Amino acid sequence: MDFGWVRLCAAFGAGVGEDEIAFVRTLMPNLQAFAAVEPDPMLVGALQRNFHRDGLETLGIELAVVETPLERWNGATPVDAALLSSST
Image 1 (cartoon, helix red, strand yellow):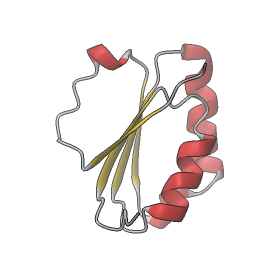
Image 2 (spheres, helix red, strand yellow):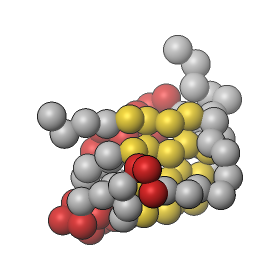
Image 3 (cartoon, one colour):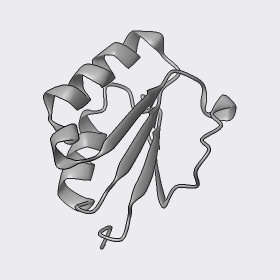
Image 4 (tube, helix red, strand yellow):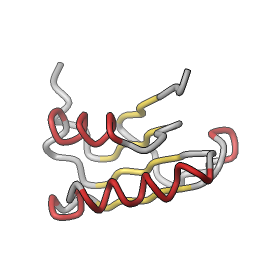
């Protein structure tokens, strides 16, 4: 699949973000903004560290990590793609 057209992406239930980071690096070369929505406060810190560690910011991607359940997220901008993850 070609995800080169995706500019804005949100990931729900991103956990620590390792799969999402790999997906973005490999398949979304033109991504401009990425929002990770994670309800578990224990995972949010690890998620932020992983985004910084893996250097997505150096690719020019605007990052946002939001600690909230999916049903409470009110992202102001429509996204081109949504990644849905499950810890089960």
